[in-house]
Image (cartoon, rainbow, N blue to C red; front, side, top):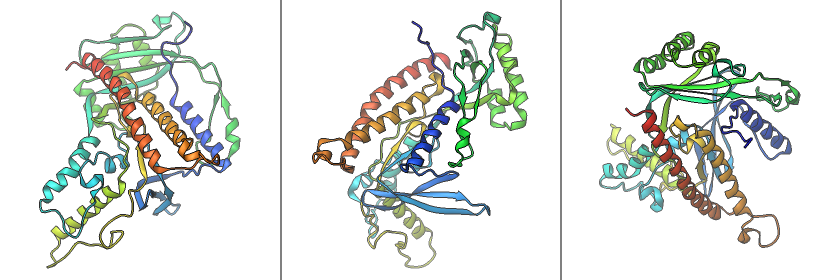
Length: 403
């Protein structure tokens, strides 16, 4: 009976724990950490492995590209607009599923060919605007009993999809910061400790077109204007809503449009076939736009003479918002990400201790075929859990945003 009805974890605390864990593994030599690097794609595919294309900025402000070592498994956790998801998720044509692409003799009906390969991909990567804005803030803790602020509450309005909720946030432990500057050698930062004050965590939602227009035209200097709009919209509501908004600094109020994916992203086991299609499409485009008579498909960018990539390439899995960004009405994106991470970890552990992989009693052997099947099975098992969450989300969504 003493367990909280709601458990809040600060994003900063989670990231601090993860970064410190990475640094420990880095010192042990099990992890290599790249700071200030963006993943632009997957290259150098051969067999069941491939490299990440890493783009970074050097001190001279020059843009440089390099390739990572080759990996058998790549986990994309790049958020709702993940580049790897937008490029590789959702391909469902017969060409992508393993029959290959013959670049020397393109299909007669090229429009049908393109439709088969990209229609599912476009649907899988589509992002929906859910039509409302979410505001979040941390206000100073109210005294017990002050303005009815001693407990949690959530209040729904009758118009404009308005909701306001608040939960007291208690800091019973001291705060240990990690090293945010990306320097893995500065271990002194581990000992930086400070005490946080208790707070009131609150959020508000609204679908008013005026707010949406203000959001789309937002810049850092109009934070006070948005705060004033919030006060005008919610200021007449019951205590302590007005006080919570007033005591939160304008620049600390976070706001974002509610967005979501239409579909989740299935693990990709045929990167090689998808990349063959991309190269076929690129060469076809060059041929169609060429003014040179008798121009043929450019094969210089293809791995070999017949345009085939050697192997299926690495497994590509999606995690968190990259796998599926859900409507924030139930605030379950964080939960889905943690569940997904645990599921992938269990999949890897399971195939490494599989009897067929460790029957000799020696160090478990990695077998890509086993991992492919394991990840696919776990994905479909998790889809049932995801479906339950989406049904709950849609139910609350119909009530919270009836229009």
